[in-house]
Length: 248
Image 1: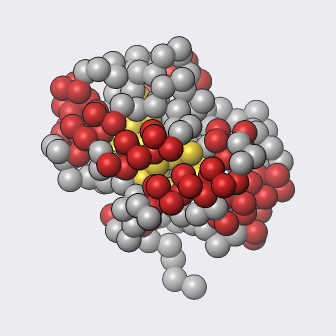
Image 2: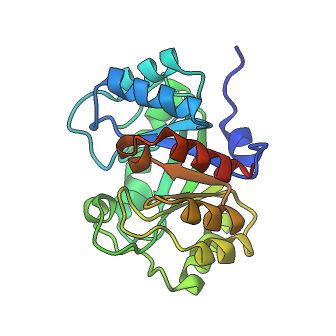
């Protein structure tokens, strides 16, 4: 089997927008998480992101392996730190938190992780990680000790996105935060897409079809959904979400 091309996946999804399931190894056993991924695959997910703001257990590697046994979905690490790695993954978002000014998340964790990423041979894509204000503080803002970009300051977000492109990043991840009360504004997504050519991934607070439609129409290349797959039991709703994301 040929090695998963993470760059190609984010550059050419073949759909209007891609749907990424986010799972946190702290929110279930490897078996439970793989069952969730299997259901999400049937409901239209295109890939699995796995990671968390911090891990209280050592389930990362086992969870990845179980998801890969139970599904045909690519499994991509979305790391909350340089220690969240596994050679079993198909790819890695090599994140730099460019919206903050905390050197730990700008470069220190990356330096710590880089030799291990190379040794493990994990295909990686340099990704500009930008936190966007979404109401009350989320886990990622608290744990990163950084201030999000105000949700109504498109000019600040655009400047960061342009800087990311000039720095050679290959994707932009706009994050409202897991379980955020408000998603990333679609107007901000549209403004960034008008200024840069990079794929834009959007996650956090996506809980309704209206939000999905707004973000897709604004030009988002991938939407990340986690909490909805954990808490919603209405499979018809999730199928409708997938169809709206894919532009069907």
